[in-house]
Image (cartoon, rainbow, N blue to C red; front, side, top):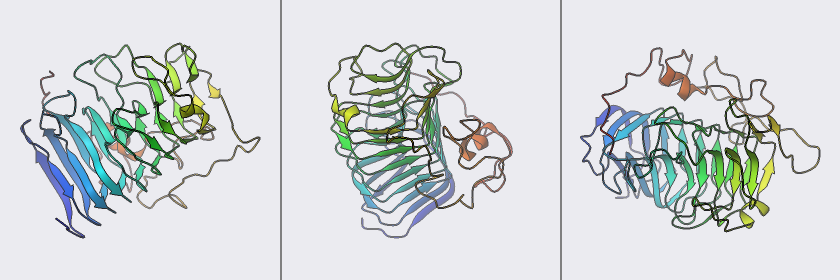
Length: 336
């Protein structure tokens, strides 16, 4: 209660699938988690790998978060912001095999979610549905947060427990894809659900090069799947909110449906800054990855960010922590 300037570093926390949570940060200020591995958190609702509540100015970085005792509602969230939070930084983490990887379940503002790699998340109730992993909103009312340079299966603001507004998504890659388990529905790269207003979507890339058809921007009309960018629609298909799209700033986002940028708002200005957070390439960035790594103005459109390179076992000079061989996978957890 009320702890200040304390941290957890260089440790592996291995649960047995029944732990309530592996790391809790409550009523804390300027605390941190660095180079930590969490594995197999609890399988009941509310049991996340890392939960942050009522805290300010904390940082989670360079860590590996994966697997849990269940993939059903409320369980096995990766990094979970709950109730009120502000000014946190989440950077350069690998999050895999969770229900949702990074999620705002309550209000949070002024947070920066930067250059994280997420894959293979799914919902136990419907494993064939491509669930959101990077979740800007799952409870009222996250606002004025920056999501930059992340790679995920689906980047989404839902409305399950309330609204959100004024969040910025910049130079992320929403792949509309995961490696496993196989999926057949819910295929989209970015989804801004009903009652999420005034979002800024700038310089993102949506989809996979293998997409040969689909819908670039879904707003009201029945959309052909896959969808690059969806607005205002319930997951059950109902269209509920035209303002999700009409209030958004949508500029310079590349999609693999049209193999181009469907819309540049604001006239002919097509220049994008390298980063909304950094004034120059950060010192920890590995030399093998271009800066910036993602965007319509990047020659290859998408590059593997340092977190993904570390997971894949690719060399990443200067990236923290260094990783020259693939992180060994633990034995598979039985899937409910």
